[in-house]
Amino acid sequence: MSSSPALVTPSKADKRKRRSSTSEPEDSPIPSSKKAKSPVKATPTLSPEEQEAYREYAEYQATWVDRSDIEQMLTPVDQGNRTDWSVWIFNNQCKPNTRFPPTLEEIHRTEAKDFYELRQDELDTLPHKTFQTRYDPNKPGWAYCHFDVLRLVYRKEAMCAGVHREEGYDPSQLLRRGKALYIKRRKKMAKTTRLPKSPKVWRKSCG
Image 1 (cartoon, rainbow, N blue to C red):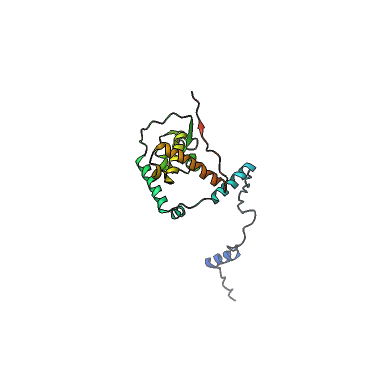
Image 2 (image 1 turned 90 degrees about the horizontal axis):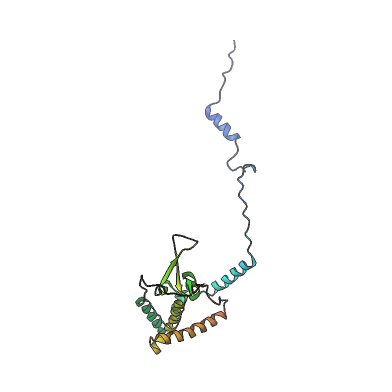
């Protein structure tokens, strides 16, 4: 009687190896039906007015000069004038409880900084009032009397030009000379870049 050959059953390791060999490789492409479809975002189209605004802003950025470069171009006399202006700012900071003056024109802080090239420490010499903004209810905006801002701009222009060293600190002389210097500088800047003619202000009624 012949003995039948023994049956060899595959081991568990062989089964796992066979299953792994028949499965898809890891780098096999995913079927198109299973690929995640990314949403297609439409490219926003700009109106002609918005395109013109972007172009003007790009031209304005091209005229920017680094403040450190300006400091290097200053003469010792100019640096002394700017030091005098910094001392005046330090000695004339507005007190917290100063009453906001009645005015027919108000200018917001951002507009005063951008149009008149004023820093915050310079604006801190003027009284201000707060108002509710539509962007952040927890962060009120600041408004200044436009006439006060103009006086500050003219005084800064005069002192940085050294008028106070020639004619003293008489406010009327500083404002008169500073206004003429400021208008002259704006006209010179307007020859190389497009500047807005006037800042955005909010006019109040007399009542």
